[in-house]
Amino acid sequence: MQAAQARNPWSWIPTLYFGQAIPYLVVMTLSVIMYKNTGFSNTDIALYTGWLYLPWVIKPLWSPLVELLGTRRLWIVGLQLLIGTSLAMVALTTHLPQFFQLSLAVLWLMAFSSATHDIAADGFYMLGLPQHQQAAFVGVRSTFYKLATIAGQGGLVYLAGKLTESSGDARMAWSVVLWILAGLFLLLAAYHYFALPKPAEDRSSGHRGTLLSDFASTFAAFFRKPGIAVILAFLLLFRLGEAQLLKLAVPFLLDPAAQGGLGLSTAQVGVAYGTIGLTALILGGLLGGVVISCFGLKRCLWPMVFAVHVPDLVFVYLSGALPENFYLISACLAAEQFGYGFGFAAYLLYMMMVADGEHKTAHYAICTGFMALGMMLPGMVSGWIQQQLGYHHFFIWACLSTLPAFAVTALVKIDPAFGRK
Image 1 (cartoon, one colour):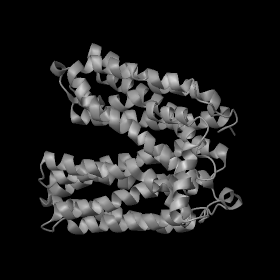
Image 2: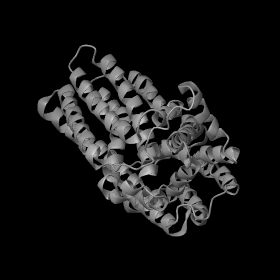
Image 3: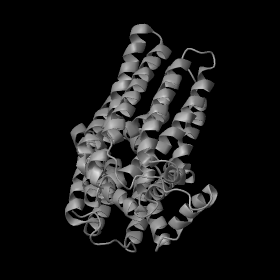
Image 4: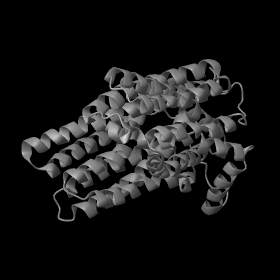
């Protein structure tokens, strides 16, 4: 670890996690806006871009390859080059007759590249920092991931809109945005080639048997961890309430009072939820990482579980009272987002603790796969539940759905020293 400790974490963690967010944002959010701007139907957009989420759910299936073949550092730089190339290829398709089909094919390539980059980057984070710094910087990585989200959903969408207004050509506008992102990723790859540390532990684990047997043994080692049933329950249930609430938060803010919503404008939602709320989320995440590094994960776990879930009650209040005061609404959203950011640091550190060991890169990817599954399945049915119950009773249901997280937290076992400086 000597080489890793000699390199200031501030020189590579912000850029690594800023870069991690961009391709996910392009695939999951910007592509939807791009296709909408260029005249495709909601049915086609929802169907085909929805499938692009799949690589992040199933990425554990190939995560052992990142450990078995090459170094995490090499994977990061190579995949950033591939993502930059993919962005350039999408830009080149914008004026072709088969734009929709060709761009989707390239976005599939980018989605798999981005999911694999996540595996390598998260594994490298654990190798490149001593344990107490992993806790201290978990808020930093989350912050720069969110800043990339703000830059993408705010700045790039705004740029695309202005270019479309001035030129009348939405495809040209999105081509410019994609070329900018392609250039950014090529610069990131070059920068990280020199800036990333070279931890002694970042090496290929090699082949003790055949590649297939090593692949299988890596998976088997995860499911042989002591207390694996509790681990899986915690990963799947920790965000059960939040997964449902998150899907309906923005529709609730936008829907008129006659439909049980707050009737905010899109611009007001952007300020209250996308700016004030996201800023509170970032501050909460930063504080959460610092607190864990001071006291350790074991002492912080229960307070952070409460911090994540109890503020969900603000949606019960908002949906019952339907206040019209914009500042009150913003304050409620900020409180909920701050609590979520603060408490979620514990969830991230718990996954790092579970993954710690011989196959930490692959095992962390497996943890994030279960995390994605725990978000995806409840989110898929949340819209139907809301339609049956209405917003007020739905948010009560979402709060009740947090109770399994409290129950499984009581069964979790954590080393008292883990995460503490």
